[in-house]
Length: 338
Image (cartoon, rainbow, N blue to C red; front, top):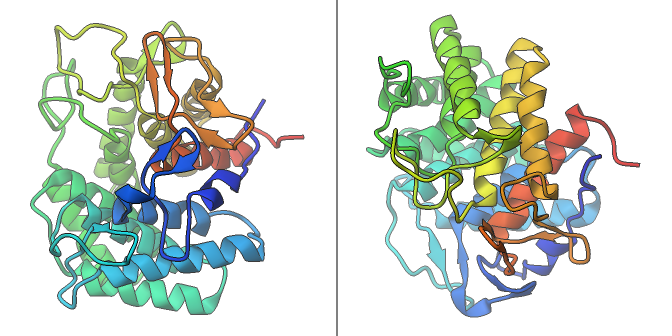
């Protein structure tokens, strides 16, 4: 069984400016405004939706306009905006910069019209020459650079950015029990092996590809419990001493695993990665540490977190997009929904 891809809740969370970050239940919390982190994620999901209707094309255009408006002339990116359209922070090179490049690169490669692809590519090039000190920001940027290279293999700024991201992510650890290139698992962990797999495909570099696949296989072992996905909780996970399972588990973790497994399958054609994708997909349906579905079939939204005794009942943008993203992969690779 696969989750039907419904954009109803995403549309409910969106107004004429952008995508509201938070919700109380399924109702947007307008007072918290919008952030590039979520709007760029929305751009990724909409850009890779096959044959989108006019309502989704318009939604993609709105998200693209939001991300482009967040860019400073030097390529740095603002993140937070209020309901009156005012930006609340200064441009920087934080995670929002990396996610903006992810969204822009994906839209430049896959948006449904030539005009939207051209606008996204212009925005991508505006920020692609910068470099962030944060490995995770560079990881997100690498995903956009890789999408650009899949569509435009000779794109030199994308090639340089992707190569720089591999350097910043750093080599795998030498301890087989903890090859992760950071002292702890943190957030959106699947994005790290996905970036390496994508770099291995696009640069191309067989050693980097092998590292990405090995790291993903290890992450799946660490984040599997009793045959089900058991993601790193919001507080992170250390090499030893943390309770298993850990809570609060976030939908973004399952979505990042799904992204990485879909990418690994594209790189290798091996069915073992579809098993990981299926675990991420069924995590949303209740095959998880609390035996609790995260999908809300009435709204089309996703609950914000899995807790030891159930779930967080709010249905914000990040969770909705995590569900949609994972459902897209499942529909394409695991079978169609009737």
